[in-house]
Structures are given as structure tokens and as C-alpha cells.
Length: 405
Image (cartoon, rainbow, N blue to C red):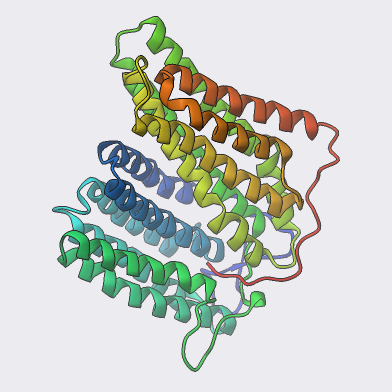
């Protein structure tokens, strides 16, 4: 791993086609998000109403965004250096406060959530600004741009922490909108304008590995939920069948993402002349529905394990169908960016889930779980067979587009 030779010891020098491994400090930092993902799924399970789903979605987008920004920063900075490690450890503390506040974020712990979140976003970006050497003026200006936008959103996060009820939801939605729109606007600020595509230099292999590990985190959380719930139940034919269906469903998701897609994505971004643009589209944005789908599927697994018999209620139908549907929508778009075509197996799976949703209310939760798992297994097998010849490799990279963190 190289570092800047002009006074920027903390800053990586990302040589073309170089692959820097994910460090132990980064993996240690990610452990906080195992807890965060668990908190989000449990919060969704406890508040599965239209308002609760909206609130939980906002919290998920916030957690995702703070992790994404940290992944970009540790792609630019060297996590093997002590100051960067200390930064990650401080962010871990903030992440624990954010995670523990999630269940009560719209009640008694809103201010704690807002203060911890805003401190992580602004503090980390100021650290990037200070750590970027003067020999990299474009990167330094990008850090200034990001700091300006995140400082603006922090005002709304903290104001929402002091507010209550719908006012908090509105203020936090504005804050989140500012953060997500800032990347799309390439962090435009008065006088200095927006960043350029060439300003965003990332080490593609490292970025792809970081996001693949987050998918592992989400899948691991679903297995933890399944195992913990199953351990507390009486083992009957129904509960054992529900457990088996949940486990096979998680395996199918792993296979769909990792068997070909993750490796192809790593190869494509590593050889791209505009890795920052590709990282923004394929990873920062298109991995959101992938991870969200895994979280929602984990909620469905817990519901089915606890109540495998009878008719499926709306909560069970939405989570059992919605989880795999979100996952397939994310993966088909991600692989489209990488391969240049829409995967037929994924499209067929999406259609099959849509048809299943029409009849799902009359099925038992167990039967619904088995059928959704069967669809995911078919998608995984179909894709594996269709790509077995190796003809569908990474496509030539797109030539245009904007980028951002």
C-alpha cells in the first residue's frame, strides 16, 4: 500500500489496477454494523405499520450512508496508520451510540441518534480534509465540498433531535435528502462549483471488497436472527421446515450475489478508467436495495418461524415477498452495470415473486416461505448454468456519468 510522498503519509496512492486488501481495522469497524443491521430489522419487526416502515427506512438509509462515507474515506486514507485507526475506533463508538438509539430514535433517544450521527459524518470528513496533502488540491477541495454539505445536513439532524413527532421525521428527511442529493450534485458549492469525474480516484478492488463484506454482514445478521429464534422454539415439523427454508433462502442469496456478480464487479471496477463513477452507481446506490432486501427477508424469517401455520397476514406477505424482490432488483441492476445486460434469471424471479404475491394471502407463512426460497434457488441455479461457459464476462466500461461519495 503506497502513501503520498509529499507530506501526505495518511493518504494512499492508488496505482492503476492495484488492489489493496481490506484491513483488520476496517473489519473491526464493520462489526458495529452487525449490531446496527440487527437493530434495524428488529425495529422494523416491532413497528410494521406504514409510519413505522417509513421511519425504519429513513434510519436504514442513514446507517447505510454513514457506512458508505466511511468506506470511501478508508479507500483514500491508509487504515494501517495509527491516526486513521484512531478515527475508525472513534467512529465505532459513535456507531454504537447510533445503533443503540435506533429502536427509540423517534421517541426518547432522537437527540442521541442525531448528535452521534452528525458527529460521525462531519468529524470524519474534517479529518479527511486535514489529512489530504496540499499536493492533492482536487482531493482536498472535494473534502471541503463534502464538509460543507454535511455541516448543512447536521443542522437538520440536530434540530430534528430536539423536535418531536412528525416534525422530527420531516427534519430528518430533509437532512437525509441533503446528503443523498449532495453526491448526485457532485458536491457543488458556491464559487468553487462541482467536482469533476477525474477528481474521484478510488482503488476499485478495495471498494468492491468493502461492499461485498457488508453484504456478508447483512446475510450473517439474517442467520443470527434465524438461529436465535429457532433455538427458543419447540422443534416441530413446521418449525424445522421453516428453519430449513430460511437457511436455504440465505444460501441462495449468497450464491446469487457472490458466485459470479461480486467477482465480476471487482474486476470491472479495478480495470475502469473512471472507478469513482462506477463505485458511485454500482456500489453506493445499487447495493442499497440488495442490503435492504436481506434485512426485510430476515424479518420474514422470524415471522414465519414464530407463526408457520394459518393464513399469511399482510406483514408476513410484504416481508416474505418484499425481501427477495428488493434483493433481486438490486442485483439485476448491479449486474447490468457490470455486464451490460439484464440477467434473464433475475427478471424471471422478479416476475415469479410478483405472481406469488397475488396468491400469498391465502397461503400459510410456511408455504409462502418455501415458495419464495424455491424461486431464489431457481434463480441461483439458472444463472450459474447460463454463465457456466464464461461467455458473460465484465462488459466494457461506460464512458460517461457523474460521480460522488
